[in-house]
Image (cartoon, rainbow, N blue to C red; front, side, top):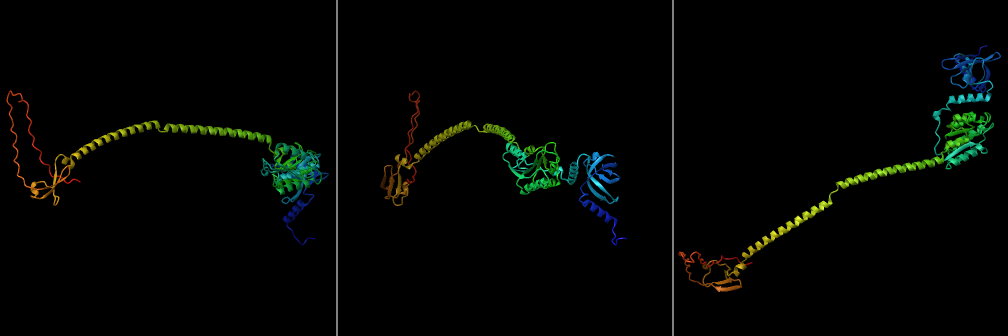
Length: 438
């Protein structure tokens, strides 16, 4: 009897695919069987069949999956993966994520499968890993408070970098509930956002002892942490998924403590080295500056004026100026003396002292230069060297002119004939009228 509802092939294929991939058992499955019909194509993918007592499962294992080297016809293996439906061929097959030879154990197979799954999701991608801070102020620690690991971490941090503060987020590190507690401790430190780096640590042990550090819950808590995480789980040969997801891995818990802390002895040595280097650099710089200053000083000294020569030149110019002034003063004194002599010769008082006089009419003060200017009986004022004199004008008869001297002709043989005779000098003519004395 046909159903009234008709479905397309694609709808049925999608339904089968969803059902297979959402089934809890089929989405995480480990199957033991014998490899048959193995075929590896050029792309590196492997197609084979797992069979046992007349039953078989079609399988595909893509290139790069863990344990692909164990695939061989007739080989008994443990295959871990999930079932899916491939619509183009209409087949349900198992996508194998990891393969181990029989005898390796279910935990190892599950570990390989989970590691393959998380790697495909990018949780191990190196590009997302963050650097560890060089000088952490607060170091978060996820470990058991009662174990030796916590004490070792404290000793290492105190010895190497006592400035850092340790903040423990306690958890159990073994058992069925350890995975949830470890993930919760990591989330607590991340949400608190006080620590600069987180150490997830545990001592060594078997695969079963370390299984909580291989859980998907812990891996995703580390991946979601906002603070860089350093894994220090187990011994050097132990490798867990926590190591793969963490930002950095240390071989031991003590090594993890060393990884997140600088060595104070190296810091002190570095500081002293930097100090010496700085001192050397500064000393060299000061020497260069001193040399430059000395060079500039020498240049200034070479370009500085010769003050001694300038002083000598100033003294010479001063001596020349003094001599010139003295010479000009002497010449000026001589000119003054000459002018004084000339002024003295022109002084009316000196003329009066030589016997001359100035005659004026008393009526109007007219200076007389001729007798005709004074009428008879006119009152006269006469200026003499010794003082004034009053007089009255009168007429006098003119004096006859003196006869010129007769030249004497010398007689020959006369003793005095060769000696010329002195000529008689005329009396001096009266001086012209002089202006009144000031």
